[in-house]
Amino acid sequence: MSESPAAAHEDLKKTPLHGLHVELGARMVPFAGYDMPVQYKKGVLGEHLHTREAAGLFDVSHMGQAMLVGPDHETTAAALEALCPGNFKGLGEGRQVYSLLLTDEGTIIDDLMVARPAAPEEAGRLLLVVNAACKEKDYAHIAGRLPGGVTLEPLEDRALLALQGPKAGAVMAAHAPETADMVFMDARRGTFDDIPCHFTRSGYTGEDGFEISVPADKAEDVARALLAHGEVEAIGLGARDSLRLEAGLCLYGHDIDDTTTPVDAALMWAIPKRRREEANFPGAKIILGQLETGAEKRRVGILPDGKAPAREGAEIHSAGGEKIGVVTSGSFGPSVGGPVAMGYVRKSERAPDTELVLMVRGKERPARIAPLPFVAQRYHRGSK
Amino acid sequence: MSDIRFTKDHEWVLLDGDTATIGITDYAQEQLGDVVFVELPEVGKSIEQGDEAAVVESVKAASEVYAPISGEVVEVNEDLEAEPAKVNADAMGEGWFVKLKITDEDELEGLMDEDAYAKYVKELD
View 1 (cartoon, chains in turn orange, cyan):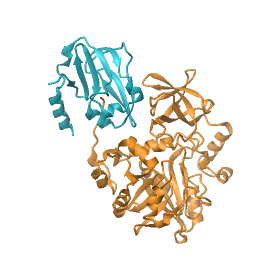
View 2 (cartoon, one colour):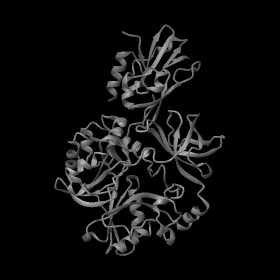
View 3 (tube, chains in turn cyan, orange):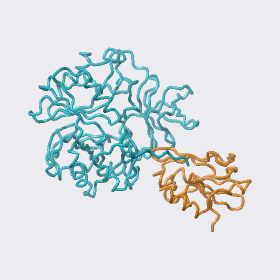
View 4 (spheres, one colour):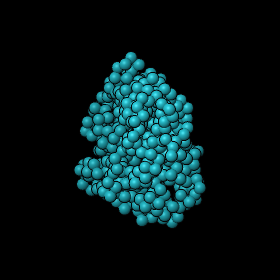
């Protein structure tokens, strides 16, 4: 059997929970310069299914957390609106939004979460969470384009944990009373067993869940307290990937990158009406032009007809045998019970149920375009 | 000692007359994780020692299974289509992949016996 080469684990960075992962018997692999758990004893399949049934705990401390700081909300929001096509001026206190860092050509530098603190004392601050593999690049890009009076402060001494799954709410409520009435995309400070934390009700699985920003020296206490619950299992990066893929969520560097625009990537919902009308974000002309004429390619969900997974890089052919695109993410979906994929196809072929042929190891594997997500999202939106 | 032999790439081969049954070892299935798909060769295909005999996929990745010995495919384990997890549950038995009709038993020389493979695996960890 072919095996992957061993990594130089000594050169890799460690999150505050590294010791805990090793103690739990995790298989550690390099990821974005960090030594990270790809799976624990349960295995990728078991960890994935557990998350959708109960609650999974993820260490995502490798991701970048940074505070954009300005004299008031309007100024800070305006500074970020010069870089991203989101509505930050109108972002409510204690709310978070998904956004995109764009180049002047309208292509994607990274995707990120932007949260406006709930407390009035924190006015003028926006909390950013960016991808681990992009954080240095993102920080340099942002810092290089800030007006006087607005600064970017990376939060180097904080860990980030994610608790995801239908039981996450009940588990969190036992430790963090402020989380009990949060709905999807709320953001607020609170305490977890008296430890000051910042919570958002969001995640990367399609399930209800929370992301917990905690001081690095308290991260293990929070993690152990959560793992003490029978419903909570430690989940590795392997299952994180299969969960997000089933949820139809993009992974930067694979489904989106600096060759894709938000139109290509079917992410126009991240560009609200006001920003489109004002056309005052990087690459606006190109992006709005694409909306008129239609982008050449389009991100779609793909369901192979058989059981063979199609992986990133697999060529997509039309039913007639023409090369029309490429798979950008592909795996086995444990909740779907079969292979799932995302990729880009020529715009004329993007309708759901369009028949495709995927080239997998030289074999033609029939597939079809399918709507995303593959598994219904179960965000907690409350009963408002 | 049984006639089972092992390769450095963690395939096993068990000879019965001129039929060789091939699979991956318990160590290999554990390294792979949950098997979700197995791609088996066509019956009748000729495979040389060291060529790709099958592909085994976990959630994360696909791995090649190499033929420890040359031969013609006479049977494949069709149960693995519906139940790829058999490779994890019983890699050394019900998780077998392929049966070959071999021509040269001498190709097995140079492969490890059970003790040698056990030693080899110990040194890997």
